[in-house]
Image 1 (tube, rainbow, N blue to C red):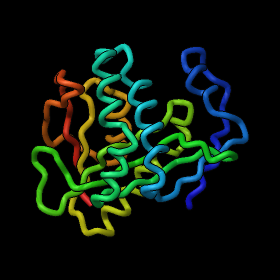
Image 2 (cartoon, rainbow, N blue to C red; image 1 turned 90 degrees about the horizontal axis):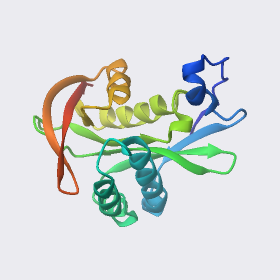
Image 3 (spheres, rainbow, N blue to C red; image 1 turned 45 degrees about the vertical axis):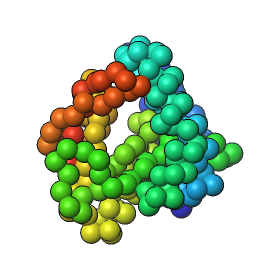
Image 4 (cartoon, one colour; image 1 turned 90 degrees about the vertical axis):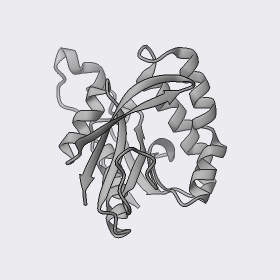
Length: 196
């Protein structure tokens, strides 16, 4: 289990006050491998972060339908039973789930034999900016490397500049595009890859 200590908040600039004050003094995050028994925890974080990220950007009815289907506990249980691996970030104390990473076989254009896909790396905004996202990414990257994958791929919403910047800082580069359906509505994704 990896423990990421809480970031000590600096005096926030006026425009960054909300993001910086979101860190809870004295709290840390523990990251551990997820099991099938964690499907409900993954589903809760998946739906919450999808809504938090895309409300006001994507169609609301599409978000609700997408989360009911894609972020159902049964969908995560099926993915883990089918060979996907996940890591769960939990706030300490209390072990409330606040994020996760999900690694699986790729379903992206341009995937080559042996590549793996970071299907999701979701983290509630309150815990962003303190190293937890990087720790989740490191867990997935280390597992992909240990599995002998030549590259780690992911798809990210083209309009999600913050996520794209995060991936860029961690060595991911654009290698293609795809259309991503959210309950029948198509959106543009950028496919990124990082050599391992």
